[in-house]
Length: 208
Image (cartoon, rainbow, N blue to C red):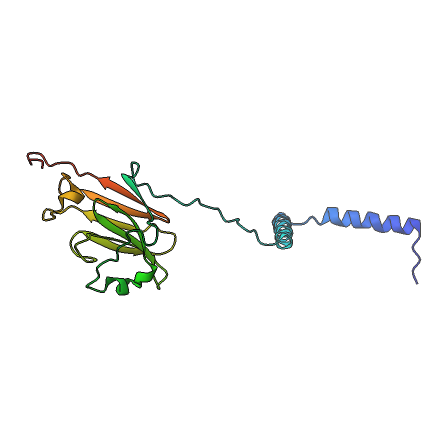
């Protein structure tokens, strides 16, 4: 058994110092050690960051609420058509082509609005879950001559358009509007907004 005294320990330490001084580590090996230390530090830091991230949980992006875009139909409506009371001059549409059944509507569920320039206007909820708007001339059936029938899903305005064509003859409806002018009916729940868009007269074409 070897006993280590203070003098013996000092001798061993001195011998170790002399050995290191006489046998230096090659430069290339020191460089590799330095690179290894740097990489080890970087990996340690990355691991720490990953651990911190995993502990914090995945980042959640809060949804951004986008306000609905309201349609712009231009100027104020030409006229606002109110609902007619039940039994107050309510007319049933003529339907020789079975348009109501095609759209999923029944006569009992139709609501009628005030007339516009002699035209009758109705709305109804179809069995397909859509909202429909009907416009017809009193002497014509649905989708005959001057009129329109349109349906739309929930959340979208239901719109019926009447465009003045060159062969349309209904002075009481279109008056002296030039060909190509548009009368638009927009269903707004308990009323219908009516817009009139006048097409500019073509140069050299007489009015009236």
